[in-house]
Image (cartoon, rainbow, N blue to C red; front, side, top):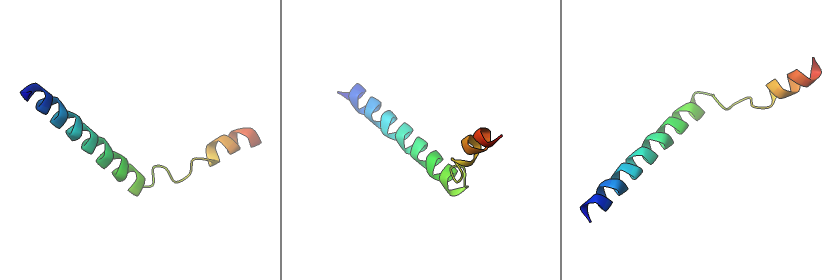
Length: 44
């Protein structure tokens, strides 16, 4: 039973880290312009 709790806490911790990294990337503008590069490739 203790092993299950450790694995559960590790999974929740990793999930929280990845959510925090995603939110930080979204706030810094990492995902602002997803359509320009493919369209630019087709225009050239």
